[in-house]
Length: 200
Image 1 (tube, rainbow, N blue to C red):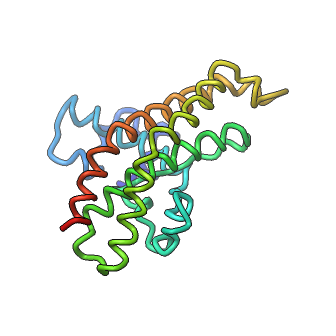
Image 2 (cartoon, rainbow, N blue to C red):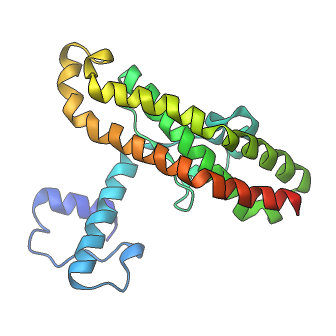
């Protein structure tokens, strides 16, 4: 049973008495409470993916536009997605957070695939990413401050009926802060690994 089929079954009430869904590859081999917990988490991820789109490498920097056609961010291994709200101030902040994460994920993709790439391309892309990671903390600080400002004062970007949406938007904004913090924390190690590839 595919995730979309499960969702239809849940909506219709047909799955209320059914055993735990075991169709997610990540949950294979699990049983009982572990399986149920894993299924729930994977279903949540599937729902999030259905309501979002992968960002493009060219959004991280135009230098990486050649990767757009075979977008690594659209894969499970290097997933970076963005869910638009339709509210410009919110979307600007969220896409900014996704791009910060994208810099680190793209660098990890480069480390993993460096040896299989064209030498000149690998060198140019690797050097560009190392340069970008060197300033990621400063870039992230500005976006994080912007998001924290929105959380503290939703009226700064929301007005009228949209202001009523603020409580539902806060979890996404807090999740973006977590993504930014994680990316900044991972950046030095990944930059070091990429630097080692460039120096090899």
